Amino acid sequence: MRLGIVVPALDEEASIGRVVDRILRAAEPLGAFRVVVCDNHSSDNTANVALGAGAEVVQTRSRGYGSACLRAIEHLGDWPDVLLFVDADGSSRPEEMGTLIEPLRAGRAELVLGQRTFSSAMTLAQRWGTRLAVSLVNLRWGCSFHDMGPFRSIKLESYRRLGMRDHTWGWTIEMQILAVLQGVKTIEVPVAWEHRIAGRSKISGSLSGVIRAGARILWTVGKYSLRRRAGRSK
Image 1: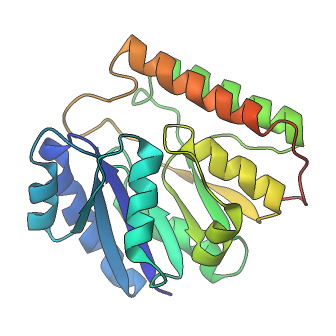
Image 2: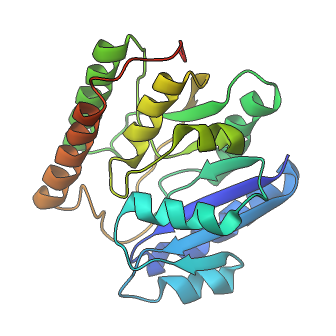
């Protein structure tokens, strides 16, 4: 099983080198893999640090979490069997990647979501916003999601069935909604969630960031609200 590891990054010069190093060491026992960092038009030295740490680096001038993910996936092309998404700030634990891969290997799932441990690493606004978004999705489509954490894996063929479009912070919830609508078998597995290694969050680091991200997530839920699910994914 070939693993394409996607790391969207915006102004993460202080953390990306350590994150890439941890990913490389943790991925070694998992089989063939490639690590692709998409520099989301950073104003710092993120791209060069990631390249020096051993990652493949691509860039997009279009700002947005979804834009960075889409560009990295485009770069990987048909090579991977599985896509795995890891944040560039060190909040995800690359050592737990195997936990996200095992259900795919065993055929128990097509999409595996890392259900974060709600600790002090998540702000009150993040916790409240997450619970609101997944509650709306659960209510509308009869699901039982607990989280929309970005640490997740999906089979490439299943990803392509989704037709992902969002270029912003609606990316993660859009993937879950489309998985429900397309009947992609989805499970959640518990993962740790830690404080970022360095720097400031683009979302929880400011009130305006929280508002913008929250509005986009809710807009994404509303956008798909009239569509019916194809089959049970939870």
